[in-house]
Image 1 (tube, one colour):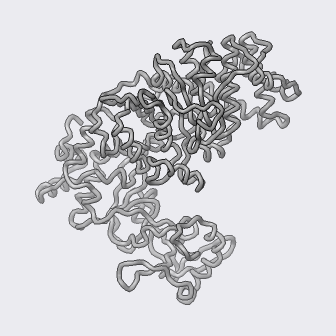
Image 2: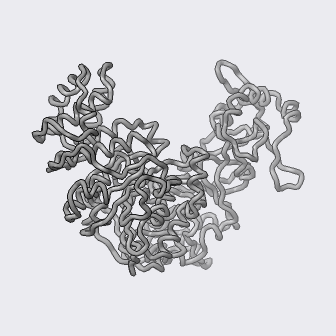
Amino acid sequence: MNTKIDFAMKSKIQEDITKYLSDNSRADFESIESAMLRAILNSSGIYSVKNETIKNVICINTLPRRIASKWISQNIPNPTIQHALTLYEVRVSPESRKFDGAYYTPQNIVDAIVDLTVGNRIGSVCDPACGSGAFLLGSLKKLLSNKAGTIPKILSRYIWGIDIDIHNVENTKKVLSLFSILEGVDRKEFRIGIFQGNSLKFSWLATSRKKSSFDFIVGNPPYVRGRNLTSVLKAQIKSWPTADVGIADLYIPFFEIALSWVKNDAGRIGYITPNTYFSSINGRKVRKMISEARVIEKIIDLNGFPAFEGLLTYTCITILDKAHTPRPLVGVALRASQLSDIRKIRLFPINYSELRNHDWYIQPKKIISDMRQIESVGTPLTDYVLKFTTGIATLRNDLYIFNSPMKNGYITCEINGNFFDIEKEITVPIIKPNIINDEFKLKNNRERILYPYRLASDGKSINLIAEGELRNLYPGAYSYLKYIKPLLKKRSVDDSVSNWYAYGRSQALDGFGKKIIFPMMSNHPVFLWVDNPNTLIYCGYALFPRSYKDVKILLKILNSDVFWYYISNTSKNYANGYKSFAKNYVKKFSIPDLTDSQKELLLSLSPKKTNQYLNKLYGLRNR
């Protein structure tokens, strides 16, 4: 039975089903589900079933169901079980995905991960976030081909799963039951170990099945951005020792969950996850755990190619083996077409010593060697400069920052038809490096920020201006702040922020001084010198040099091809070739120790000659 379906077809199915449900006021999910499952069965010549799970779905006989059946017959001439999986994906709204991290994996990647994990072995398989059952369906097919027994035996003994959403639990059971029927095995009931629960705090021993460990863990752990996590979920994540560092990320503890659930002697794990754990702060303990345990068999970086339709997340495949492996194999997808069968991506052996105490560079040996070479030539960037800072964070930049012309010492601000004259003296120039990315834009930048702070008497700390003083000295600004007070009070400010008109976070309030600025992310190096010491930044970063005489040298190196070569191979990916310039990714880039004559020569070179000279200084060959 052919159950494969390509991305384009899948996208069309999703689009059509969604449109059908929105265009037909009498349509409902149950009707189209019933019609779809009936059409899949009929397509295989099956017109009656014994299985209660499927029978309860297809028995619906209403007008909306008959309309849906007609639509399917006209639009999907040969429906397969993959269409059912796609239908269940449609049921999950984009808003729900933002909070529960439910993104479903294409079957070709599922089958490859199951093959890489299970191989020709026989044993129990668990998916700790099973969604609608794609990985468990792939595991069932794999165990069948491995001659693990009959379908009922495999379902009852070897297939296990958990999902936090009861609909996903039910859908997984439907998918597995439907597959069984299509394979000629129809029973009133299949015994399947799929349970509703939260894997972050789940106990298998508390279930009716009393399972304690598994031969294989496979899946696509949920991915939820930190800002979308509830405080309860953050606490649950950080209850796992390897996930209690940095900003919480839902997929991170699933590595530790898997290693605690598989058998100690030879349990195996196959995951598709974001690749951010290679170098992120919150992935530090996970990297340490799996490298010190020597359980890495394969890591394949999918290199920004779209593994999940409609989701710009940079992913990787991680295969772990508790039997221990002497040398991990790593590889990188070089073309999007390689995602059709990730098993064919070329892999290279590396030593565990390459992974200990480092961010991970999942690259061919030549690139790994180059990255280590760049890091070892001179002084790490964060040690070379006086300080590395972020920008300020008001948490309502639209209310604090103005781009209006100055007139008679005031900035006129309009909000909801009300006009306020804000005193120039309580504002300072501010730059947004994410947008100000060349000298022309920098020269013509006119943004200013309302800055209700002043330098303390000790000449070091920054204090918020007292409300009474603010009202007396800057009545225009105070009147404006009072007007927007209801909006400011809605911010989720840091615990240390007690005054309603203060910025939402206290970071970078003292970010004055001459500095080199650069964006949070870019698709090429953008480092600019800000000569005005009275300027702040937001949405970007700043380097404060130890010596102004070396600023030109630093700018030339940071804006070079060598720096971009380093960042391209070590930093977090974003869409359209953009890379993160966060401190964690640039801190180890080293600045060579240059003599005065070398500095003079470097400053005199053209861009092309500069890159050639820097390649030589960094000891990079064949670039």
